[in-house]
Image (cartoon, rainbow over all chains, first blue to last red):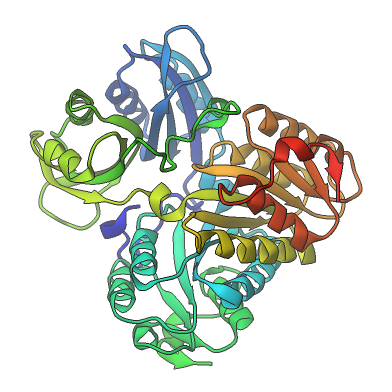
Length: 238
Length: 238
């Protein structure tokens, strides 16, 4: 979901949830195919359209110009593909797993230097332990330096599909970064920071001195298989 | 781009490229807004539509039901937002940086145990060094175990936006995983594996024994600031 659309406690529609089936379809279409018609037919069949990705076709089938990747809830992917295939101009519609089914919730790590690699080490090791028990948690990092670039990345986390928590790994962060953290928390994404210089730790949900521990705790905070409730930790320092 | 749409040597339209401006717009719209009309007007203004993400609005503005995040090439984001704002039913259209501008090319690491964390350590440290010189390389990991789950993740890498290389981190991989690696290479995404048991190393573009080195080399292979040409390394073992 986009920046302004992740208020706390709303479910992430891209993540598997009991009582809802998820599925994706990939549709290869000619210029005459009407995307809106595809969506209307899917909705009539009871599907909730979660995301649509549209991009130019480059495989070279005659007349196929567009590809639509559509993620759906509450409809079987094979049934969705069958329905999309009935729309005029649709050349091929295939069922796929959704990216949420494969890659799950995302821990985003932003920062630089020795710290970001150590946070990644902790988070990746911990995600492995939870994924072995049936979860799907990804750990995604972008190494960046500088107040403006880091602040822009923090703001963009709100637009990253399936981002569930942010870890800031550095030695000094404040100013525009602190403002961006406040905005991110408002859209419902919690923020863990290392214990560092600058004002950012004042806005953090959790401040952790050891980077491996910070990565580990971030994964625990979003894991269904962990007994770690961030709301009981808010404002604490470890 | 989707699975079948990344043949080798085709540019990734989501990644900044000399001679093309990139920009994103976020459009909040009522049910009466016509997405196709928005796209037609953007194209008439010279824009190439790279991706569209559509999701339900949950912020509670009266009558706003949908949010469209649209990534564009060859048009300034502010101009794109202005044009989208002229379409009936559009409540708000804002310019944004694209996810490609912020998070850049992605190294995907799939596997488990001690190895995946060490590959991430190497890749994150190396990406930091290139990003300091102006690149944008993200390192994204999913810890998984089991032939079917890993094979499905390998196949899904083709559908991940901005995925440019895959590293497989494990001790034994073959069977369905090897088949999935062959398919992924066909759509233009190179694969680095650790030196391990199983048939997967036979399909790898590069086999590396040390996991930190594997992560480092994977980043070098997609970095514009590195002198490391995977085509000259194909089939080698380090």
